[in-house]
Each structure stands twice: as C-alpha cells, then as structure tokens.
Length: 292
Image (cartoon, rainbow, N blue to C red; front, top):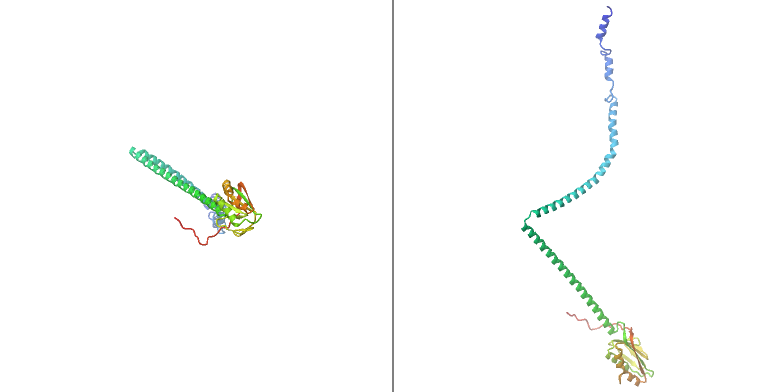
C-alpha cells in the first residue's frame, strides 16, 4: 500500500528535466550547426563555401569575356555571307519567275533591247579599235618623220663637214716638187670634183666646206687658215668614174699640174673615209624663219 502513492508522484512529475529551468535553458541555448551564434562561428561556416566558389570561377569567366569579341566578329561575317548568298539566290529566282510570267510580246521586246545594247557595245568597241589604229598610225608617221629628219640632218652634216663620212670615191695626190702649184690650181681641183658629183672631201686633214678659202703662196698654201704642204692628198667621196674623168680632161687639173712640173695620181676606191670635221659655224645675222 505504501508503494502506490510513490508511483503516482513519479507519473505526475513528468520527464526528468521538463520542469527544470536550468536544464531547459541549457538545451535551448546550445548553438546549432549552421545557426548564427553569439561568437559568429556560424557566419564563417556559411560564408566559407561562397567565397571559395567565387575564387575558383574568376579565371574561366575572364577567358570567356576575352573570347566573346572574336566570336561576335566571326558570327557577323558568317551572317553577312549567308545573307548575301540568300539575296543573290532570291534575286535570281525572282528574275526567272518574272521572265516565266511575261507574255511573248514582252519577251520579244526585252530581246530587242538586249540586241540593241549589244549593237551599241559592238559599235563602241569598233570605235575604240579605230581610235587605237589611228594612234598607232600617228605614232608610225611620227616615227617616220623623225627618221627622215635624222637622215636629212645627217646628210646636211656630211655636206657642211660636221659629220664624218665614208663611201666610194677617189684618193688624189698632187705632187709639187718645184713648189709651183698655186692656190688657184688647188681651188680648180675642188671645183672640178664638185662639178663631177663629189659629196664631201678633205685635203691634208682639213675638211672642205662651202665657205672654204684657199690662200697662200706656192709651197706655203693655207686652207681656212690651216697650213698644208705638198704633196697635197685629197680624199673625196662620190662617183669614182665621173670624178676621175673630170680631173683628166684636156686642159683640166692634171694638165695644169703637169705644166708646173708636178703630177697627179688618181686612185679609185670603194671605201674612202673622210673623217676631218669642220667647226659648226654660228650665223651672226640669219635666223630661222617661222613657217606654217
């Protein structure tokens, strides 16, 4: 009988520590894992994973950002090319569709327009070819005129003694052992040779020109102020036969020299060189006339 009251008192008391304030406050005040506490341990544990994730992802994001401009450029170029190809294809398809939908009269008109355009283009091509041919002929004419002018200048240079020359002719040697050949005899020889077709000549290294003057006494002759001595050697270019005949006629140069106890030796040649040059005279009064 004495034990039943004791059991009731135990059942009424409830679980141990349920009514104990000290024990309850201790259980409630115990910090939970991940729960912010007074000492901040929970905040550090929660923030730790977030910081680690940020540090690990910094490099891949920056790399993707650096690659983004290049990728954008490539995508833009590909898009432009695809758009252009699509536009060309659509235009070609539209043209074919338009032609297929036209009437026969319209097609004939288009064909006529194309034919007219082709004719105009062919005419332009022919005009350009004609102009090109004219330019070529003009160049040819200019080249021919220049060549002719050069030939004339060379011929004039040979005649006035400013250009060397060679060709068929004679070598004439006038011997004067008695010093009796006068300037008149030498001048007569020059005139006879010119009358027979002589083109150019020189006497003892002095070129004979239109204005050449023979002066001095026998044995001390001068040509244009240059002294010459016997025997006088004349190299002349022209027809050998005609010039030899002119010097040998009765009463001519050969006869005159023989009368003065001298003699004349005439040697024809197919390669006579006249290389003595005259200085180019500058006119003091004459000037070129302006022609049309």
